[in-house]
Image 1 (cartoon, rainbow, N blue to C red):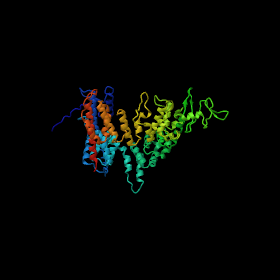
Image 2 (image 1 turned 135 degrees about the vertical axis):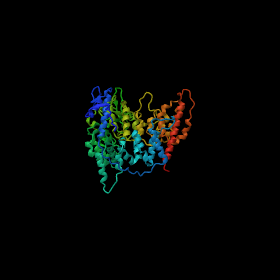
Image 3 (image 1 turned 135 degrees about the horizontal axis):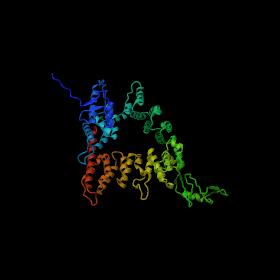
Image 4 (image 1 turned 30 degrees about the vertical axis):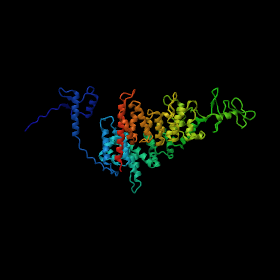
Length: 605
């Protein structure tokens, strides 16, 4: 019989030493709190504490009783959509593997596969394919890392992606879209009450992301029913949740939403009130739009005023009903005629006075008198009283009134003039920038292509004239372009690039439909060719090159092939620029051909 001598413990610790005391000593430090351990000879106190914690951990785990086994997950739902073709499946695996690679290697002229993944997903969804089950985890990981992929990735993943996401907390983002998909695919059994009951339960008990998605889906299916769902719990929602729910009404906004939005103008939250006012101003026939229009009409008017020698203005009548006033006012003369100005004027043979004739020849212009105060009614209608730093109060209030005014009212007030005629009118006393900027915001909010077209003007005209500030429209022309039809957008930007080059065109290109329609693609290629021949720094155009890789029509690849050669170094050119340009064009051509291959692989024919 062999007798085994127990090995003495490396650390003596009281068996009753609480785990919390060990943790507290570790957090505070052994110099500030003495741990309930006795170090062995030669051992320091911190090491003894760690040994004691390890021993206590083993003791605690050994004392646990096995927990009952959890039930397994439900069977994954079926996805009846067609499977990807073999070549497309291999391409997706390559794109997802490149996304997870630690770094890009190889030549700088190689295409960036990560930037092609969004287009591949869009094309696959266009053909209604489903993702292979084995690639679902990688697809969800890609969507988790890049928010721009999520909508298309979840569409491609279908019901199985949502089933899988519920089993992994890392993919909980996918549940944001789960409610809308679930409600849209709810069965319609014999009782029509099943779907509404399930929808109501999810609305009352679901996660916030699920509720937002459910509300959006319900609104898209039946705007009135979606609004009724929101109204039922509105008073109990948190302010930040009310704001998100209210913003979700934007896509399917209709006049029937006005009573609810009007009530929200009295909400406790300032942000909720502001959002409600913005949505109401997008409804041109709403009561708020009428109130804002009335205020704007008192601030902005059409006049024929002309400054006099003493700084006063003399007003003349125009054909559209404007009045004529002299600086001293009007009064009847002894012979019953009207005296305008300091002296009476005799009528001419045709019954008009000399002042009338002079006034009819004056050019109308816009006079602006901004509000003197921001009263409680204006604040309730969403006007923010405090301006940002560096902005005057009255101009700030004026801008908010004008941008919330229905644009068709200006034609009514300005004698039936169209947007282009109104924008061309001179504005008195330096108010043009503020007025036009407010019209720009109104045109974008109300999606008025006619007003956006008028405010943008001709693309060939330089946005900034020497010695002048940029017109209001040029503070953000991309937003105005977004309201124009896709074809017109492309033509406008193409003409702009042909006139001004690519320096100011990056944001404009970003709002154009993909692939770029002609003549836009040709204009971008020509401008890049000109910059290359001029010896410009190629890295100055890296942003436009990146857009061209994703947005140019792949059929342009053959035309660009000639630009892949290294050009001769020109005098005064940036050192090494020719080689960089050649690499950039090689990458562009390679990317376009890869996009064409992707499109062919996904084509079911």
